[in-house]
Image (tube, rainbow, N blue to C red; front, side, top):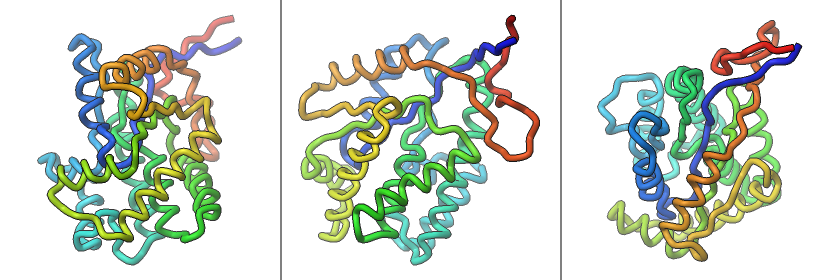
Length: 250
């Protein structure tokens, strides 16, 4: 016998601050009828003011408080901060994704595990090759507890243009050290995309206007395959996660 998995797709939209992830995602959602519109999980920057009371938001607020205004949520304990950020994304998956996926709905995460892997690796390692290896280690760790996205869409742009947009949007100026971290993040995102071209698709704003980007995003999402999600928790007898809605055929 074999199993057919019937579930929605799990998509993440990644990229530097200022590349237009929120703008493009909002326009993307408007393309879909209300009855079939993907479920959007807001990215970290919008969570603290969402008005919702949940574990993920409370963990994020604790990190923000400890970071004392640092844009990259650095409170001086990078290993602990990394695990808390991964816990937030685990909570997002359990609370915000599983039921929607089981109902056949597409779920879009505004930033997901790749952002955590990129930025926390760069914070922990000053040498880029070590950060690259560490990013894969963090992704492997996260995948033991929740699935990676079926598709990650990486929006890229000229780093200077993107960060200038972010500064204008947030009414703040980044320090030279923070600028350097953004440049390193852009390079590391690209390296991860080159490592996993089947999972991460790069769309470059320098070569595509907004309409073309949105067209390509929609086409990629609609064409994303939905293989069965294995249950990664050791020691469990369940072969597949409940959101797969398995049907058995011969």
